[in-house]
Amino acid sequence: MCAEAEREWTQARTDLKRRETEDAVCFMLIAFGVGLRGEEVPLVSLEGLLHFWEETRRGEEDERFIMVTLSGRFKGEVDSHWHMVPISDKTHSKIPFRLWMERIMHRRANHQHRTKGWLFETRTGARAKFGRYDDKFRALVSLARATNARLVPQVIEAEDFSLWRSPRRGAVLETTQRGVDSKVMELVNRWRSKEGAKGSMPNLLMRQVYTEVRSTLPTMLKYSQAL
Image 1 (cartoon, rainbow, N blue to C red):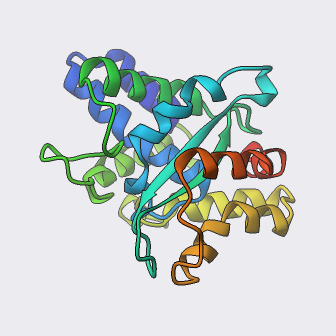
Image 2 (image 1 turned 135 degrees about the vertical axis):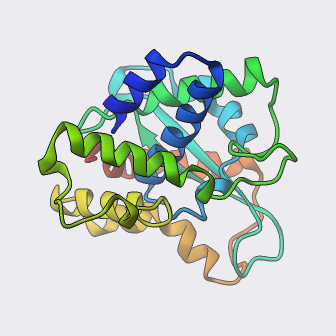
């Protein structure tokens, strides 16, 4: 799907087409790389991504990662909280996470001149919903299947795919098949357990949450490295 998207992006005749491809692909990759549901990806904060962008791209190739920063009032919480999960630059399938994220970050900061708010927004500044990108996601599924029919069985329709659950299910399947320990999965998904604890997570500042996550970084990166 990334290969088909790259072809579309390269051959696009308008900047609007490139932007539409960037948005849909980055939404898909974040959902897959972190194992997020479609309704969770819109919680990704542009401010948080920018804050740690340069810091996380330093070092050796194996050490580089993208810190996905989610912010907002989660279920059961009274105040807005930060939650962070890293995606490794180096993955088993060589998924170009960094390439696509650099494109969307460059657009947000240098073309749209935005440094605050959500990574995925509507024109009014509201969080964009996953349905906004579903048609492009399904189109990429169809293009990928046309290239290699074995990727998606013919009995499955493109309409059966959705950013609501498909990337997360795929991520869980891939990491499980590649032997990722259940403790790693629990660590990556621990923010959900805190979310379900009805606000028991301390209301830490962004940098404090980042420092906490950095202490378990080698373990957490095993999740995306297996993809």
